Image (cartoon, rainbow over all chains, first blue to last red; front, side, top):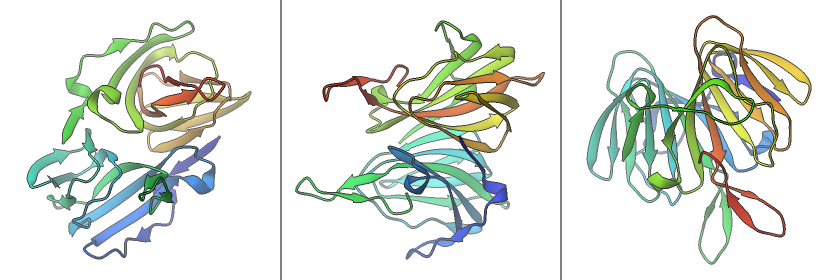
Amino acid sequence: MLIRRADEMEGTKVAMDGAKDVTMRLLMGRADGAPNFAVRCFTVDPGGHSPRHSHNYEHEAFILEGQARVEHDGVFHDVRAGDALLVEPNKIHQFVNSGDVPMSFLCIVPLKFDCGEGKYEAVPGS
Amino acid sequence: MLIRRADEMEGTKVAMDGAKDVTMRLLMGRADGAPNFAVRCFTVDPGGHSPRHSHNYEHEAFILEGQARVEHDGVFHDVRAGDALLVEPNKIHQFVNSGDVPMSFLCIVPLKFDCGEGKYEAVPGS
């Protein structure tokens, strides 16, 4: 059984356009033999944010610490540790740290997404 | 965007054979429009445990509070808040609260599993 802790893993700075001060730790994904979905832990420093974007797969997220203002297709939600969120496919979304301490959240994604014509591609970061 | 908090949800006592003092809260699943996987929050009271069983789909779990002794096919692991676990398909597993306070964990499952001959059934609790 694979056991991982975010606080014992080296993080990877998220280099995507529009990301600011975000670190990712892949707790479990395809390389670990996860069959269907990947669990990532993101930490957003104060003043930082994830990219504002959309894609045709969902996020199921869980706020572990801190607080965030989350956009979901033009609607803004204030969330905090203990909140679970469903970001639906194809909705524009962004996580902005709205506090003065790091904001960490689990972000779960499927391993693959439909890229048209019945073809499937790997979800980035899975 | 769906937002749910376990501490604001009514729990359901897990009635499966072999479960003792376990409460489930379905944070998001098929009824919420989750496309591929469900996030459940389980709380195991001190002295309690999940059923010892196996099935042909995985669990990806994250310990939120407390501590547990987890069996995975005859091997026992002590885990605590912050640990992420991959319980592989078809492995016998059981979560036993090994502390004196409630132990809570997220348990993520796919929405469906292969029941043979290419047929798919709904994962219980998804």
